[in-house]
Image 1 (cartoon, rainbow, N blue to C red):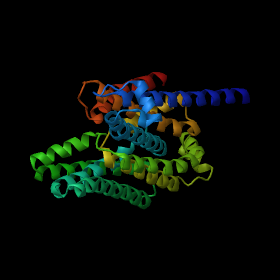
Image 2 (cartoon, helix red, strand yellow):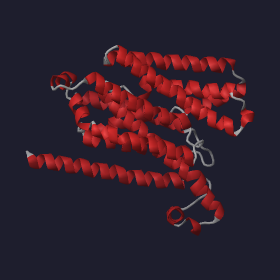
Image 3 (cartoon, rainbow, N blue to C red):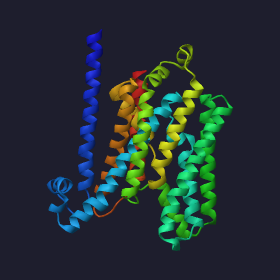
Image 4 (cartoon, rainbow, N blue to C red):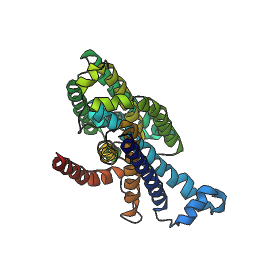
Length: 342
């Protein structure tokens, strides 16, 4: 029995290493995609010794492509991590970070900045948009936490309240579009689709730092999350305070999702599909599943970033369109596969 357990753990560890290797390959493909025709050798040389590249190639690689590629990894990992925690603590396979309405409220905050903050402010406008998106997303997360505390943390109530906030945020964004100019409406729509090209090095650092700070708290609760998957009643019988656990998880999810979407817009399906793929590959042991979901989320968004540049030469398709087009059939395949296993 002990030998079989060790073999299973070894297989899961090797699968995580394979995911990490796939992530590195995807990152290199993402850096290579684009009209500059940089070879893989030039990219690796430029990353190791930037001065070896021509000035224009160095600018393209280090100031344009690398921040876009790294923000895809950071946002994808944050959405994947928040997705697995949301699905586990709410015991709902259809749950995702957006189930709580955080992305919808981030869109509302962004629309306020686009419509009410004059574009003539220049740098100030560029700062206010992610700032208001972040503030609105955090307000939504705070409302979910407050509602969870008032209602005793019942998961059905949290899901319903989150969906209500989602529709409220969407309605408020539509109201802002109604009073906006045609140019502002175009900007709001473009933001809600999701796009990685607006991010630079400061955004990469902020999102990555948020993920790195939250991840240890998630890893600290891996045994608790694994136990919850075995049944909430069993977890309660062992003395776990499910309401308190759920509130801490919702706090982490709200922070991760808020920082993930405030700079790049609402990118769908990553936080929903990533955890399911990780669960198929790694099983229900959250010691592997939590970091595995983050790796799967990062890999999905990195591949989507690569496809957004490679499908139409010279054109960058908003990555949110790619994740939705690819995410729907993948999600349907997961549902069919789960039905067959049952």
